Length: 271
Image (cartoon, rainbow, N blue to C red; front, side):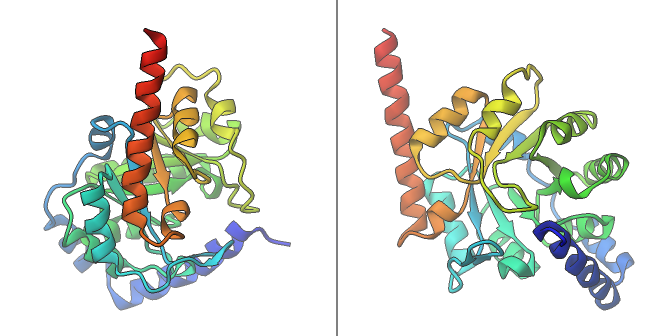
């Protein structure tokens, strides 16, 4: 039986072929080249503590509908006002997302935008730039090392930041070979969608490199943020725990304030 990731990727390949027929590569490349210079994701994340990438998605293959009625532009604006360091926009149809959502967010915020999707083709990188993304996600679990390296280089050529996402020690080692500025450690296994919140701690136990680490998935509280920060994470991607509540942006502001209180208490104890 194929994994969830394999089924999504098979559908994505067919989808990208249809998109290529609808919009040829040359005009897409021209549109990408005409967009304003992208913002640096790493720089934005290093300037905040906690640096939270707040996510916009309507559904999940593992959890079903989350917030199907959301207004992408309104939520992106609210996230920015609540203190997000960047915004992640799901553009894959399995999450009920689209490139139109990316454009809607770009129209209202100046924060870096991460296009979160299943990217395997340079065409998708041009799509990302043409529709306003500053960064893209490259998932090590679905890319062979040479393919990952090629896409990472091509993203850089376009000025895109590339978050290389990993879920195992082997993937982490492969990711580091491309010299990434940013690595995402996803606590969710994309083959089974099971979540293991100890993964970041285990992978970073002996890590002494300079890449900025983003902890992804399963984050519910400021205590989770602090635990992951102690493990070595410099930023956090938070989605479902914000979106399942009544007021996602208010919950984001609350998380940031709670983390600050925990940090203040930690500093007072040290005195």
